[in-house]
Image (tube, rainbow, N blue to C red; front, side):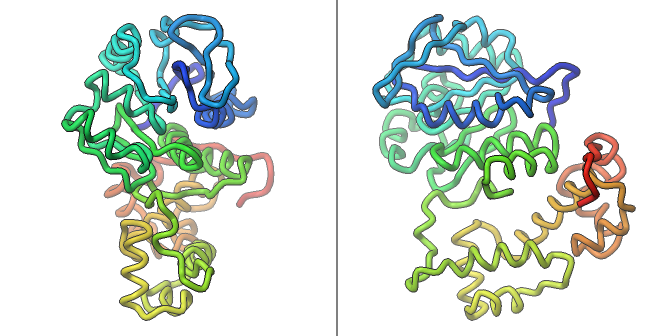
Length: 324
């Protein structure tokens, strides 16, 4: 879903008592940073204006109350500790925002709030793996998947939180303003450009016994070589694994096959080049390893429902420096 506004997209973070400062600070750094002012406005609100205690012993002072949700384009509900039943006014404000078409985003234990409001019933959602059992006990009607970084349900999104919130927010920017915008924020925050939502929360599941994450090194290497033909055998050889072992570890890590992952990375690079360069479409297809303009059109049509020309027209942003 792409959100388009003549004015900056209004993001409001809801600070509930016991809020996790990390979740709030990450949102502020992504959406409230001065370089994002043309795209987003960022506000923090509480049940009412005034001090809000955090989970780490200090309080934050918020200037706005729940009425700020009435004009929000996106509402972020960060985690809070402990996840007690929110005030009835909070739940009603979130339901009203959802009814207006406002996008709702939960981070970490914020999923408990959306679930308490009945907004996750029958939906796939995620939260941090450490509270999965308690979440399922309280909200059995929610399809909880605690093994992924985030779930994008269109109008309602949920993320695992902690460091994964950066990946989650980059996904939101990519959905709103394209891959180039997300890439610029990732570079500023010294973060990975793209970890998909179905990336596992626990990175220890697939780290080799010798302490070297060969799979991660191969992912990085493949992104730099995507203009070349990359077969499954070549990827496995770079990782130093038999093909079957590599495929199994890759699926455990990314929840995708190696070739599906590579196609998604090539498409992301094509999006970035369409947004930030004036290269001809056939040249972009070659640089991404997709071969021809026709093949690029096919991939974009299937994945994004648009053509390269239409995508460039909608997302065009030529940087002031030399082309990428």
